Amino acid sequence: MTMNNEAAKQLCHSLTVADSEQAVIDLLTDAGFWEDESAWRYYGDYENNYNTIGNQQSRPDAAPSSYLGLDECPSRSSAKTAA
Image (tube, rainbow, N blue to C red):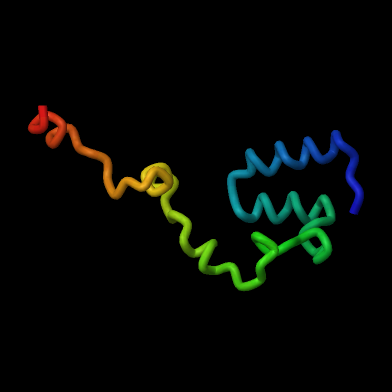
């Protein structure tokens, strides 16, 4: 599948503002990518990648603390008692 630069930019923008899984599927179908197996690769080029994918945070607010290696952020009350 070949796509010019402007069409690729438009598709990327549309994907970033899509508000549902079905909207993403519709955009990819309309662009000809959803059913085109040659357009897809395994994450990390590794077919059995659940150990990588499954290790991701399910809630976006938990991801930064996980990335930084923090188990939990201190609460206001613990910050006051520490001062």
